[in-house]
Image 1 (tube, rainbow, N blue to C red):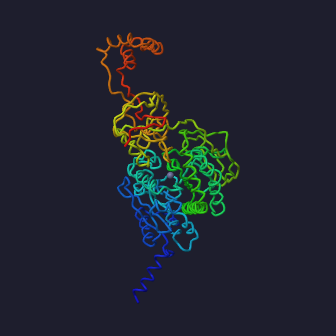
Image 2: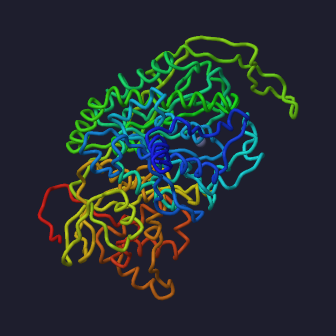
Image 3: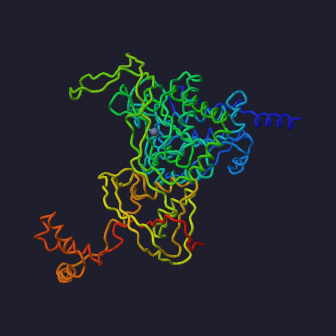
Length: 584
Ligand SMILES: [Zn+2]
């Protein structure tokens, strides 16, 4: 008898978790610690067969990255789920642990989704929800009351940098932290249809508790771009208006100026989550809760948006699938890829914006006017929202990139991102297009651990180059096409060249000794056609050369067969026509 009562109790626990309510510490202006958060997810996973808490590879702090998955059918193999026509939504939290609204919101969402009493659970019929509870674990453990100078609670929170002080929301493309490497594994394994990352922002003051970054639609293939811009984005804003007591606005992208005269859409490069995930045709969003609003309101507004996003995904599951498939086909046919964008200041839509009046009282420090917002003076007025971008760099995709195996850091990143590659099975001399780096600048201060290059320009030479057995042939096709172009076209702001993965080519390895080279240099002026004229032109442009034998010899050296052909030659070859290559 006792046994059967126990069975009934257990059965009740298995089928319903109505009695499990994660603590709402945010109502007391607090946020859970890392161990508390994971322990709450464990409790939910233990209580419901519809949820599992997975451990993936490590993060920089040495602890594993968790993924909490809710699947109504109790199926947790993403391949099977996709085959069963389930949509997959991935929510990433705590990338900046000083911005914990999303972490608290996702925990409540998880319990709500599994609760019999909550209507939101209906979305699980065709949608699987994957939640990364805390992405930047190192930053979350670095907890203090002083990590966010302006934030209106919680009392203590984590830190923006991770265990090696990287900003993980600048690490998606270069993928150097173990956090990013593990995220990449999760991302390509689960292949979400919809992605959300949660943040909190400052930069301006206004009446909104929550703002939304929708990934720049122009970066997407045409059908997905149109759907996101004309249907999905407006529908999400409308849904929030109808269902939530919190107002939502597109992310107010201003800094030290008020948004009264309008503001522009954020264009998220692939170093950032939504810029990266949208390269793979994922509908990508970022919530930015507003830093000055009460923490409890930030969490609740974030929960409201999550409901809207999940309901929209559920209600439009077939359409989302259809549009993404169409986009993948369009991407396969696409030949030209935009790698740099600039805002178009002539195109905008109007937003009925609810702000605070900007005032400029004298600074207490300098006496000079300083921007303040008067929260007692509310206004509602139409402002311009600039959300159209024009291309400033477009590149044609080759049929193949060929990467010498020596560039291991490049190859490992492509592999992590599911890029299909073949290996040459024999040594071969191929006629390929090679870039020479003509100009570039390097930032004087490090950015996320790198002295990055910018303002990069190149010229192309078609030449015979030796490649060797084991070098990699990268066919530029499939849904990874855009990612490959961003990574391997050196002029792109986010290219692996810009991120310093090819810096060795920027230094010459050989040189000459002037005291023995002069004789040979003078002789080459007579034997190399046109060299003498070229030297005269150079001297005419740079007077200091006239009296410097060394400078003249250097010029002759650099224009002679002795000068290394590989100096500033980007080592990745390009082939623009389909051809048979000796591959394994
Ligand atoms: Zn953030």
